[in-house]
Amino acid sequence: MNHLYRRLLQFLKPYKGRLFVAMFCMVVLAACTAALAWMLKPALDQALAGGNQRYIYLIPLGIIGLYFIKGIAYYGQSYFMAYIGQRVITDLRNYMYDRLTSQSLSFFAHRKTGEILARIGYDVTLVQGAVSTAITALMRDVATIIFLTAVILYQDWKLALMSMMLFPLVIYPIARFGKKIRHATSEGQVSMGEMTSLVEETIGGVRVVKAFGMEAYEQRRFRALTQRFFSHQMRAMRVQALSFPIMELLAGFCVAGVLYYGGSQVAAGFSTPGALMSFLAAMIMLYEPVKRLSAANNQIQQGLSAAERIFDLADEEIAVVDCDDAVDLSGNFVASVAFESVQLKYPNAEKAVLDHIHFSVAPGEVVALVGKSGAGKTSLASLVPRFLDVSAGVVRVSGEDVRHVTQDSLRQHIALVTQEVILFNDTVLNNVAYGHDEIDREKVIAVAKAANAHEFIMKMPQGYDTLVGERGVILSGGQRQRISLARALLKDAPILILDEATSSLDTESERLVQEAIDRLMQGRTVIVIAHRLSTIRHADKIVVLDHGQVAQMGQHELLLQEGGLYSELYHMQFEQQGDVDSVI
Image 1: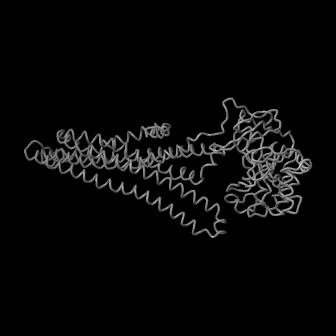
Image 2: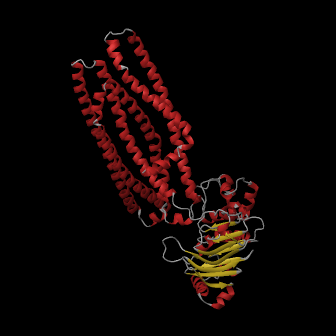
């Protein structure tokens, strides 16, 4: 667990100045608390007993002064620790988000979205409690314990040592309870991740849920998860609730022992009532920070459990990174792509997704990738912008191994249009101009017209300033696709990847999208996946994939004459659709 402490402390380093001020305020606060207990002795023995009349005036003034200083110190430590806690959590969230957005596609292939959301949301909140509230209480209460211990040792060291013999009995339950709470919290965090994942899946697939009448089933699944989370939370609550009476019982033994022994000392004349009351007050005050240490430890254990899950996610190795000597792909750029004996195998997979892929795409060529579902078409296209790295072989763009150029410079030369259009909960304007620091409204309008999107955009309530909703929910599939095409047009990249860009569209939308695609393809090197036969028929090269390998390669007419898988797919689609422009 020490490594978790050290990693969390790394996030405190940038704020060590404020941390020092907060710690100073905590020390002052603890010293004032101890001074109030110490002042009981002169108040009783000198002022109230009549031994020294000056104390009647000085002690009340001293108490007022101490409370004033105590208030200032409390404000200082509360403000600065709250600032540090919030900054640490902000930095931790930013760190997590940076790591997540830097991961390759293979990372997200084996992670549930809900689990990721739970870690960056719920788990980070638990760490916040450990960093701000719990650490504040820990440092403040430890300082208070030290000062109050000094007071009781000063008043009666023998009685103090006797009282401290029970201290190990206090520490044991604190440590024991902390372990139990951490275990229960860890299991609860897993349940929270599963709940978040289920909610995300259900909302995303709500049409399917309703279409199949599965509302009751999904409700039962969610109730089972909430019940499991409830059970884990109650385990933690039971431990926390049990810690209080045990601490109270131990405190009762301490106070009773002090009263018995101290009272007998006063009766025998070896001590004064003021000394006994000052000692007893310090003991009672000492009990409060010890009790709070138990609560702080419980909170810290919860935070450490959450930190372990957060760092487990953040520490997963980023599969696709720039090499140390990566260069910018700029200057004399040539829009060529080459696959040289490429193999791709996902982690923990038995069989390669792609095996011995070897072909090239010349500048300005249109190459179509066709094949049955699962043949590896999308995986192959994903190697070009280096969303994935090859397991063997080389992918070259402009003659350069994509692993030896920076990812930013590589992707600046590539535009991507996919079947599943991703739009953000922002305006139409910002969605089209996504990826551009400065937005040229005139250029956005121009590309929207070229993408056959301008007409429907202008019919929207605020035109280009209309919010499209999450994932473009207010738009139809064809409208979303045309905005995606406008985005690709605005990027004006020399290499274009079209991944089933006209799939699942109605006839009219398909026609408008196809017109926009034809404009987008002009003068570019294009890799088309499962596009309309009208595009594939005129492609310079058709690559037929079967089980991750190149089964056939050539032009449309030659492949039909050759027979084989391409001819089989062609006639299959022709018979199903009765239209030579069917999807291959």
